[in-house]
Amino acid sequence: MANINLLPWREERRQELKQAFLVVLGVVAGFGAVLVLLADMAVSGAIENQNSRNAYLKQQISELDQQVKEIQELEKKKNELLDRMKVIQELQGNRPIIVRIFDEMVKTLPDGVFYSELKRTNNGIQLKGIAESNNRISSLMRRVDKSDWFADPNLTAVKAMPNYGEQASEFNLSFNISTPAIEESEE
Image 1 (cartoon, helix red, strand yellow):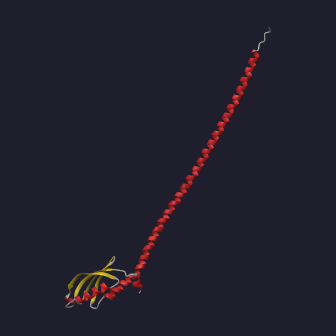
Image 2: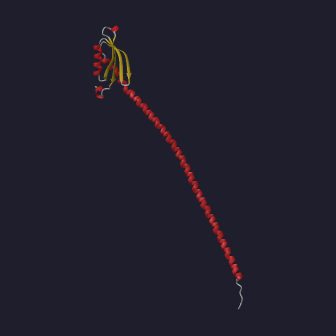
């Protein structure tokens, strides 16, 4: 039988397969490295993109916060102006009332009664005066009580004043201001 040595051929074949395997392994490793590099670049790009979006949103939020502060300041100024306007309107509305009160005081003043002091506090008036007699003080109280603009007359003190006359008296009278209904004041 003939002796054939196949070992060198097998050895060469193994070397070729080993080299092919190493080449394929190198290509796969290179391809894997490229894929990892591309994935890293994609993730880094996505992170950078998200960071830029976050920065943009923070900038917009800070601008909106500034606008909200400006709006709150404007609202505060608006409320202050409205309060001022309300006070001015109330003062303008009350101007004719003062005139009517003085007019009504003249109408309710009977002959022989003189006011020496007048003091207004909120919705009340306190009077000091001198009357020729106690009947004149009673007449004054009746007129104040009948008035549409005055209510609740209260005589707090009556003191004789002989140096102004035999029956002369000094008196203290207080009453409240009551605004008549709109229909009554228009008539």
